[in-house]
Length: 173
Image 1: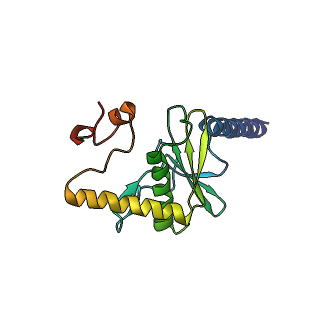
Image 2 (image 1 turned 90 degrees about the vertical axis):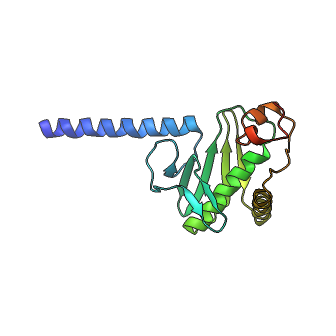
């Protein structure tokens, strides 16, 4: 009788954990699949950030989801979605797609950009990859010149959040 009681109790605990996991996944807006990597403290198969030495590029998507043989990088932003995703956010997701392909040998068809109230699918086409590689080359040229790329927006809020703000001669704030 005790064995049966323990078995039932373990079954209930197991169902509770599955339910909590599904609830959390829904809250985060994650697609179905296994979380392979998380930059948010959840379990992970990958221990290190994604890295490509040839490009000098390192990245940590918030989540990397495995669906069968497919991998989907997911970037989560804590703000409300703009009408159209910012180019910088799109390029961030594209960079994660490229890093997944280069490091893991699996080309993602797309990545997800998740805002508080909306999600965008960012297709990882060969044209998108070329735009990303062109941008990386422009950044490398600017680094060699010792300068910064031209500011591409008129948003003071974006300037305040920029990592180059302190050294930028084009900042708005």
